[in-house]
Image (cartoon, rainbow over all chains, first blue to last red; front, side):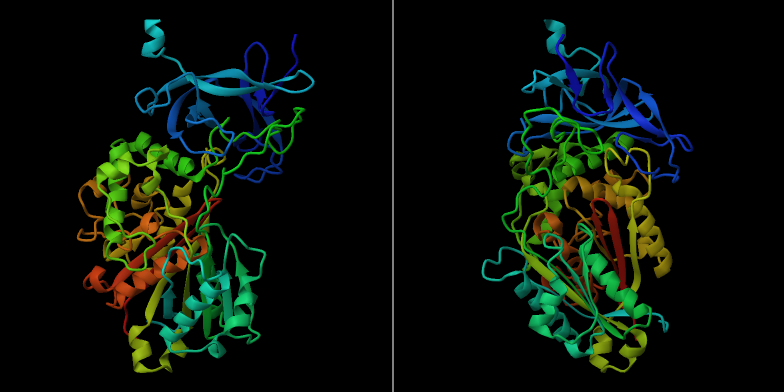
Length: 139
Length: 401
């Protein structure tokens, strides 16, 4: 089997891919990056917390102008996954304001973003609509 | 008035736009000398200099400026605080005067940004040949465009869309109409980088940068500088009648940073720190939002202006869409916002912005705004926000000395 590595260390691969946060054991604030201490309460102990894989789009933008090498257009979003806010792209959807709407239900999905010289695949994540789009339903 | 009051004695902004023949220090000098002349004072009377610049923050702009306008040996504070740099420089001078360290201070903000493209997310490092986790997210490659976006038009697009998700009523057209207002206002401002009126159709049909922000809905990168002289109440009393007549009371000077809120690690929360700054400012000034005659707020993108109506208390919570749709924020409305044209047309030379918006308010309070004068303006508010985040709010008042 091909070796895989997640794009970011808070993406857990395997049979049920999911995101994991560093949760402050004192106040429950969650962070996807490494923290020296909790920005909310100052606590310095963290435990891993699995993040719900479904959520609701709280905000999105369709980026049409980006750095060279970044394929556009793409949909960047702010997703509420059971009370934890997550940043990610909305994928497997047409990048327009008819297909992508505020409040739409989405679920985590993963995809291979590239293979390095050693043959290791890097795996990224995004969110896809839970309700099939009209196009998929027709197909 | 009270003995603790601080006043704006002189203030100046350069024309915003492309200044190919002027370097950074030329622009800073023009603004500084303009502010000194406007206040009828000289560099020799200044007890402190606060110099704001973001893009060359390590260059010692304050000392470079002193070489051109007066090396008097006073303390120079070089200030960088994202898009709130200008307001931070002004507040630094105000704090020095308020602390009694000196009677008068000079604050300058200057930036050269003409031709700059995306200020963040403008380049992406190429993927390496070997996936190797690094950084605080343990990422094996750049995440911009793969996990959300780093570009400011996209970040602020989401900030406006989040407001729409929370309260409803937003649309591409609504945000474009905000931009239509500011561009219409700019036609009366000779110092704006762009003073062209656009139709709604032109705005919506222009190049899409990050939905719903098209190009004219984004702040314009340009060159410019602004400067202000602040003075203590006691020192102002000793100045001429004309100087006292034109001086403007700084009723509130506030700087906040972003307190922790859920989600702020994912999408910057520009709301809470602005709400906090506004609350403190209204308390300092002893006024409420309904007392304001004009507001210059940080419309770095059309989507941002909407949320700040609410954050600054110009409407009831959730009422920003209704406020805008009522026409209140047009220059002939009940709560004129960004009569200068705002950052979308006046331009956004980052460090200059937080003093230039105060110049705009001051010019109306003095009754010197010409064709775009808001008649009878007595109280105005200027707001800036720098992502990261920092928020500056100043309230000026036309008061008798």
